[in-house]
Length: 115
Image 1 (cartoon, rainbow, N blue to C red):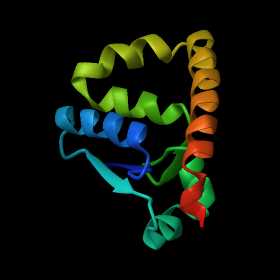
Image 2 (cartoon, rainbow, N blue to C red; image 1 turned 90 degrees about the horizontal axis):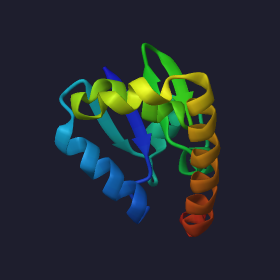
Image 3 (tube, rainbow, N blue to C red; image 1 turned 30 degrees about the vertical axis):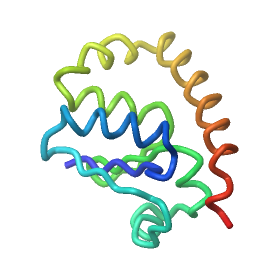
């Protein structure tokens, strides 16, 4: 079982996760972090940290950032080809840079949720 922690209040995040939900099975549990104290407790992350990056708990291990996409793609057959491409270090490095930039701007856009 994989638990994905995402910001459902972010329009872009919600659209992407809803898309993945269509193709995923019961191996993935989707958890909205918006005002979710239980998510903070489970991950030991602050609300700010949960809004800043996506997180996954897999096999009892907390993973965050671009690596979350690798795990999602690996667990959804339709997107397994993306996992196979981006698991290679040079391409993952580029994915990670892109993710961090995009996640930063989405966090800034949704920073009002912290109030």
